[in-house]
Image (cartoon, rainbow, N blue to C red; front, side, top):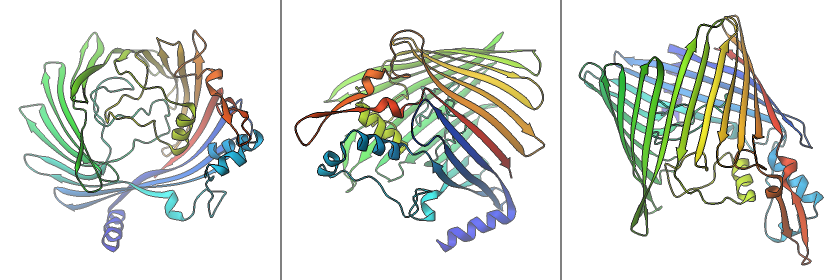
Length: 423
């Protein structure tokens, strides 16, 4: 620990950046505590350890007060008379030393989200440690990204770090090949990725191969996980365009199966005010996603994870066909507005994310974003859960059933006010 603190302090003495921020989230159409407040400090320290070597550290400290999904669920369970049933089943609600901040110790609120060493060699650039990894040209979802995350629907969220070693080798005038060897946070799997990019005229062509291997605690091999093969094309032909496609190869009982994932889109900039950018994309996933029980989905949401999948490269969305689009307009040098829309073409559900942002001086910024689930047609689906799917009949100790209405936990919209001071 002391060597690590020494390196962090050394980095702080060299160069610091990052931000302080406050988030206020207000869910609409729910009972209970009316809002959630988050205070976050996210400083980044960079130290030059030589002409071609640098150490980068980002610490994320977040304190949360107000509405808690777990607490609201506990309230619903008590109101439905299910507390004795859950107690008999051995289910215990979490408790904390500090109930206001929901932490037992300060370390529960602080993580080292980035910690990596950059080595710039004549023929290869190397980055080793916890780092952000994101590949692909498509909008919002990237089929060829072996570390899939979707953050545009939550504009305030940071990309999660990955424990990895990345080796980037340029060749020719503009081409390059990147090799990544990564592992999970608990070191129970190994992921190897190669992405090679060729620049041909005004077109960037990338090909990718990825392999994930899972292990038991004794480090014995337990599963041949799903390989991922992909191609990514991006260029300009009057408008910007991209085609990003991947093949997921599944080994189920030694009977291989393959499903596709593809994103095709365009964007264009218009000379309106400070700039108007319009983006449109069709996205398809051939994965047959298993049905997720509402309670399992809710539990995953409470823990900040997604539903588990045997496919390590599984797409974020569980449906098949989508239209995605965005309109962003610069109203002035310091004021911008935009709207993101995701439409499930199969069940009619949709998600709209309007944003409004401004800056003050050189360091202050403020934005307001909404998350509004919709049903363009039909009774709802993946992006706007039908009300009947969230009404559960739960058996009780006396042999009867109790009605647990989880709709009371699902807001009709959520608005987030973000205020940030850049260091």
